[in-house]
Length: 158
Image (cartoon, rainbow, N blue to C red; front, side):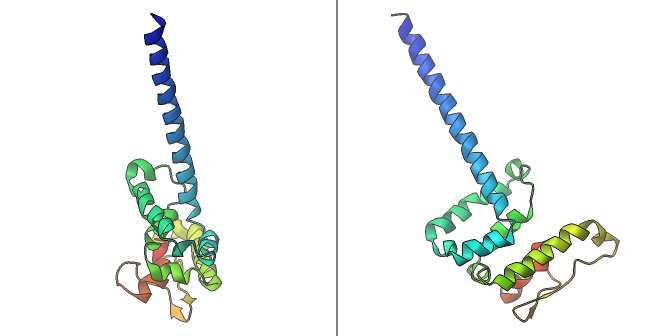
């Protein structure tokens, strides 16, 4: 009879350990996925395969916004991922990602941002560009509410 409380305690301990392991695994999977969002080619692939048409996937992206909180964001190596997560809430941005040229332009801006970001304060320039016939240099995403915001990849990289 004295074994009964011990076995119940052991079962509870095992369940707790199992739950902790599942939570750790979930954290790792979500962190890896979030960081993939910093890759314009990955976003282009998701768009072309119509993941952004699936309401369940869009709800998952909405859910993942908790990663923007400081206690989670500190684990993210590629902070562009969080900005792209915000941009993916916009249907027009998701639609533009289907275009290979848009992904190429975003990739180019991202590359030059990483190359020169420390020199921007010294008067350097990440540079403007042209996507789909529209100027993407200058300004910040979120300053307006239309096409300029969506295609302004310079703002994406700030």
